[in-house]
Amino acid sequence: MSLGPRTGVVAVVALVVVLLCCTTATGDVFSIALDDGRTDYVETARIDGAWYFRLADLARAVGASRHWNPRTSKMSLAVGIHRVSMASDSQFVALDGESINVHKPVVMRDGEYWTPVRFLTRALGLAVNSEITVDGPGETISIVKLGAFVMSVGLEERPGATVAVVALNDRAEFSASSRERGRIDFFMPGAALLDSLDVLDGVGLISSVELVESEAGVSGVVRAAPSATAYDAQMHTNPPRLEVVVVAEREQSVPSPFLKGMKNLLGTGASPFETPDDGVVTVMLDPGHGGEDSGRVGRSGLLEKDVALAIADRIAPHLRREGFYVFMTRSSDSRVPLKRRAEIANLAGADIFVSVHCGSWHSAGASGFRVSYYVPTPDDVVDKSSAGTRGLRRGVPGVRHGGVGNLRWGGLQESLTDESRVLARAVRGRMAGALPNYDRGVGGADLAVLAGCAMPAILVEAGFITNATDAALLADEGFLEDVAGAIARGVVEYSHSFGGRNQ
Image (cartoon, rainbow, N blue to C red; front, side):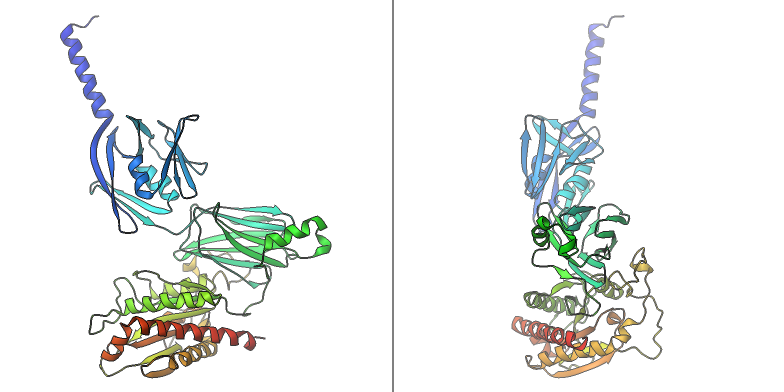
């Protein structure tokens, strides 16, 4: 059957309409809210009824460079040390060689690459280590920087050593210690697991590796064979990874050509396995309040949460220069529940916990600084749910925990009262010699933020925010630096005396 001229025209028009509806409609623009406060824009298109985004605009927004490979007919983005490659009409892209399904195909129109929503939220998000969200109705894209992701965990046999390799998508802060023979604990604050990981069975000098994710970050336990005598933990950049190296330093058991290689593996940071309470290595700073919890408000509008964070930010570099690992329960204006603060310290295996606050009172005449430690009230319930003091670092050997929520408080801070008092006195002594405001001394109090800590813990009030004279000091940059320096010197003094009391 043949079509007449009129019918043919109608059919062609209908086909054009179908193609227009099912392919591309361009011209819309989404705004991109970047983590550093900048705003950028990306052109969008509706392709087969779905939102697509122009790759060139995305690359500009995240600071990536584009590369076209004529041999493979693939486009790639280079973002720092990461590379995302893609081919037109394929729904699979590769991040550093690992395939990721973005659910809809990448398409090329008029020489431009266009990517679907899941390319942003999955592949690009991993490459720039950020959470990317797309709000279609609001026509906005937000990019928020995240902590590092653990991509995988593996074991490698090397000359004279076995290495646990924790592969990451970005470098991360970490601490590592051995508080029990044959066990190394490490913690990466703010990190997360890309996928759930089972306990990894060991080879060589490592018997097992276990990682656990919490809101605070990723904690890990490496268990070593009885013949292991030393370990080292190092963060590498290219590619990003944490390596925990375990060796058996017995020359007679290691072939002589491998001795030099073994020492190179360990570098200068090698540590023997240690016993509990052998020194102060890690300090957890806890800036009080945060987020919608402003704490007390001074007469001039000064907020306690801002003062606490400003002081903690100044303490940290002092302690790092002294060689301590330093972490903070919060580093921005965010709310952290009281129970969670102790959990973070316990999961990090902190040796000292210092909570920073301002004093306040209904009378404007009250003033001065004070350092407190935990003393429970007589009716304190010992088995109440709290901060997981039987956590990863100080846990029971061989016992696996599903998460911090399953751990119970065991009244450990009560057994640390004497040590906490010694720490408080050391810090107060340094503050008394450096600060101009009234010295309110040292005292015990039933402070919830300290109750669940599994290490010596104190709370420092730098001054009364409700007192006009103290509030003026708390708003002064020089005074805040003096407070921070005094607290840091007190911690250093305590750490120097700690080892001698535990010989």
